[in-house]
Image 1 (cartoon, rainbow, N blue to C red):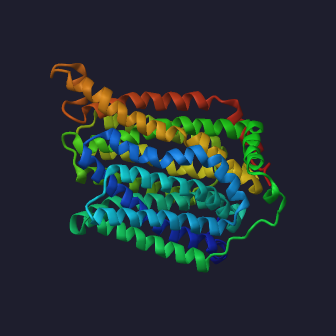
Image 2: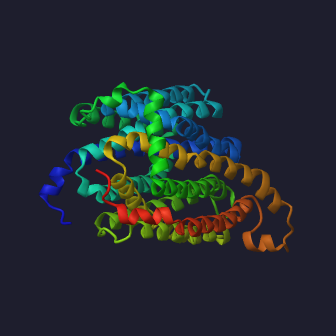
Image 3: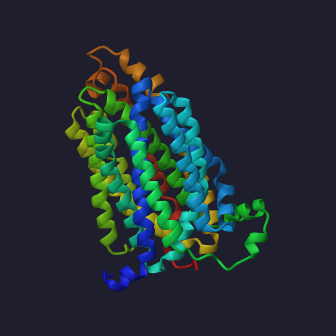
Length: 436
């Protein structure tokens, strides 16, 4: 598909929304990154830091089914604005506590819980909004753009956060977050029009009946349901990785805050590059094959290099191999969902998907933090210098996290090979244009 003036004209509303929301996402990511460093330096515990993400995802997982039903009933634009405003207010509260020297980690758990609740309602509304402002022929291209902004933020977040933290402190990071929120809020409020559905039947349905329809749809659509289970299993492995990653980078010999920022920046550059490729690449003959192969390649590379690597160079190579194919996987996954799920059902189906696909994330974060602190680090601490485990993963704090990466590498490969053989997932290939 050629890129011309007509393409940009048809995508104009989406592009404005995407750019401003991505800018706001950068501010939020910077705050989250700074808080991870702050919490780890305060407690030195992988589990305490991982609980920041657990508190964010818990309401998201528990309430998503009902949030999607509400999202389908409510005005999408007002829903997005209201959720963003409440999230911004929690950030203001955190800034006040920080400036008064009263910020405690339990405050962050509570604040993250509120933000997670707002994201629970906003996310399905945002997904439907994208569907409504964008012609169907641009679905794959949009997946690439959204991953493009995510990866760009991954590049900028550690660089800008580290610089701002060092020069002006945590308060400056939070203020930048609030400024980006203001930009996105005003743009959405005054310059973006999101068409609303003309259907009124759904508005009269009880909340439970509306939510149940999303569950019923997935019971009938076994291919989509099994694809969601596949991603849920991958998310479990990935969230264990996310919980162990900063603990290893900040405590392992050769690691530091700068090294954590460097490896995160390389991952960001990699996904940035991958998202550009995903934007321009032609539609594949088999989206399911692309999804399976990309995830298998990722799981078969990065975790092993993180486990055995002893230098930032090896960790950066691992980050590159682990993330270069993920944007292509994500764009095809996004296209499969949008093409198969009818637009009028997307809010409810996406919300059920969120509960099923993402419930493993808080579980994985908790497991990752627990396994590092209570299992793998104690195992490595008790080994002498001649032990085979010490020879494989090194000694000192952080070697236990490296051992854990070795274990989850095999777990990730096993998940990919198992779901690759699922017949219901492959049946999606023959039904790609069924949804209206």
